[in-house]
Length: 102
Image (cartoon, rainbow, N blue to C red; front, side, top):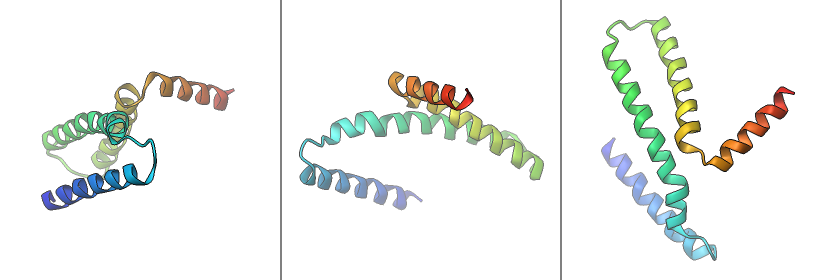
């Protein structure tokens, strides 16, 4: 898995370099700051909690698998909302949800 991750990172860097060449005004630094860092900041806690929960539960069956899956999905949604979204994105999301409800 390590080789796949390294290869993916190298490919990402290559794509960002190509985008800078192809699209005038595209800044890889801004992309990293606005897109990749929030993804990284949300992924690390989600994976850490998932690993900790999964390693502490010794009994494995279908019901526990379903409960864990639901928990991880809800945790992901919560952390993406709290950490991954900007205040502007949170505001737009809240407006979209209000429109759908009413």
